[in-house]
Image (cartoon, rainbow, N blue to C red; front, side, top):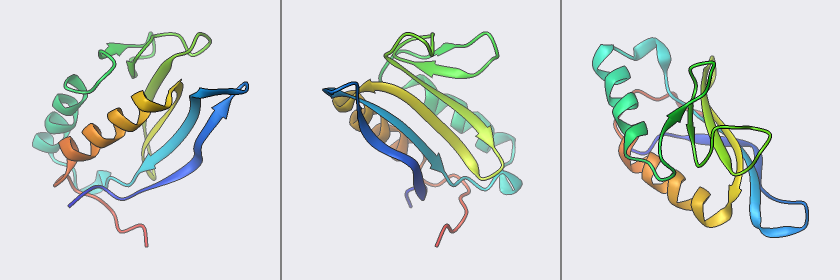
Length: 114
């Protein structure tokens, strides 16, 4: 089953450029049910995503770039409601990243967001 999600900010064109979008999505993982194997699976899923995994100075995973002030970039952060993913990047890259992430994380413990 795919991880449920909701958007705090749907893919929105940036600066009049139709190809670049700003996104903020929460994937509803249930952190309370995560065991060591689940954390390992999440970390492994990061490695296979488009955009080349790198790490911010704060230890956050990033793809497509490593500077939030210089797009493109996409980053993720573990937050109480789930995994928050946000960034500015080409729309095609966002769609590819999201599809691959959902496929890679299917089956991990998730909350019912309904």
